[in-house]
Length: 250
Image 1 (cartoon, rainbow, N blue to C red):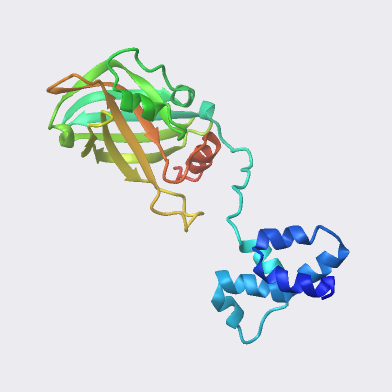
Image 2 (image 1 turned 180 degrees about the vertical axis):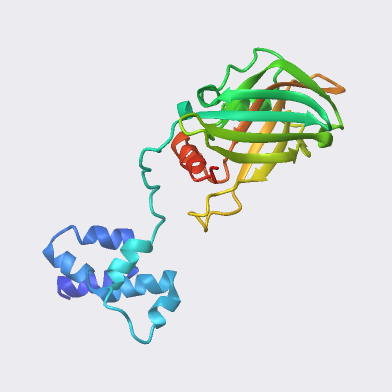
């Protein structure tokens, strides 16, 4: 049997990556492995309905497979148009009608985070804070406490402002801390972002904010820090800044 016939028998058993590698061996292998019949068979394994088109397009099955056989790598974002140095965050926390916390937090402080206290913080919370997900944290000074079981009466609002244009956007609007993760000593609240009308397909994106509290306080949540993140969709500094830029600024 001629070598060409052997290759035509063997190639249909190969996966796409291996068949593509064969195309780099020599001109003969490239010509044979480039036969669109082989690539149609591979496409039929992944997307059988694609091969049932009554009028196939001029796009070859090789190009179709090469384009869609795996997820595209994460695209590199352009530099954000804003920076944390341009922003201030306005955070207010109430227990019913009592104001517990009210601060203007510069974006640079929120971005920098804070050093985890040496004692009193559970290992699960330390593991969470040191994780790879991008999150913004800052210390609460002075600390405040919330009686355990009354967290559902505690609400939070967060606004963000641009220093150079005096424009503001809403991040969280009077959301309740109605969930406590007792394994990592966090009380969580969230709200859906108000995205500018220029981005009509961006909906349902949540902003999360957490109260971080000490362990070994039986009847009180001793809050020592606050964390905010958009981990549903944004997992890097650049992604967070682009998301903030797309808010409905007024």
